[in-house]
Image (cartoon, rainbow, N blue to C red):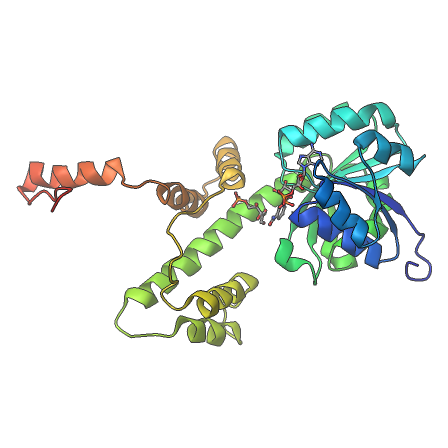
Length: 307
Ligand SMILES: NC(=O)C1=CN([C@@H]2O[C@H](COP(=O)(O)OP(=O)(O)OC[C@H]3O[C@@H](n4cnc5c(N)ncnc54)[C@H](O)[C@@H]3O)[C@@H](O)[C@H]2O)C=CC1
Ligand SMILES: O=C(CO)[C@H](O)[C@H](O)COP(=O)(O)O
């Protein structure tokens, strides 16, 4: 049962991957009921193992929920959200609430909120799978009544009541999450540059010890720095065989696009994104041209591929 005074809710969860399973578990732990669906039967079985009622289609999930449906989507951003909403919409009305907890583009969320027959909440979710124990930070956009209605669920999925808030109207939750990710890129880049200098610099340092020392009282302590400490502990100060290729990048790209549109300078976010893209190239054409141009103007020796 939920804590006294909190009504027991029934939540449909669609998308039961790394993040969706955590939503399921935290909502069940808070004493609510969950009906769960995923395209993967294995993922549905995992949710059923922890106490969710399994559904074998979106329609089955909607039928099981009955009136006043409360549904959380945790599918990959993009087509999967639209496909799910297409299947759901015939079963929805204005008393229902749908939450998109994924990393959708804020403009797509505004469009979906307008088209959806239910009240639609766009919910930026931060904390990642590693945040399961603590709970997430939730940035929610959409109608106030729907946010209030979902508060017991947000209390359960977030770190608690302080871990979620309504940012504003449709789109604002995913807008805030987009900018959060831009900041995330910069922090990763800043820690990366600092540790690179320490790794390449004058002293033979134990970087796990550096990170641990910084995490205990230093101005720059943070969860990302704790993750640096973990990485050096598990991989070694030289990061072992970890490659210098960084995947992802969509949310950072959106942040930079929006900053250009708003004419707000975000050079650090752009630079961090550019480093990420640059990491994917085996070799950089621009570096090769610079190599050749130094010969052009200074007759400096050109480094050749088989040197
Ligand atoms: N992993 C992370 O650190 C974070 C992820 N997010 C966002 O949360 C969302 C989910 O991410 P993850 O759980 O990491 O992804 P995931 O890939 O682990 O799980 C996605 C799940 O959705 C299911 N799925 C895909 N299309 C579906 C459909 N049409 N109907 C039903 N189920 C469908 C897949 O079978 C899979 O089980 C994404 O938008 C992601 O960007 C947000 C914050 C942190
Ligand atoms: O939102 C997140 C963290 O806050 C997710 O981890 C997201 O998948 C990061 O994606 P990308 O690195 O491509 O921006």
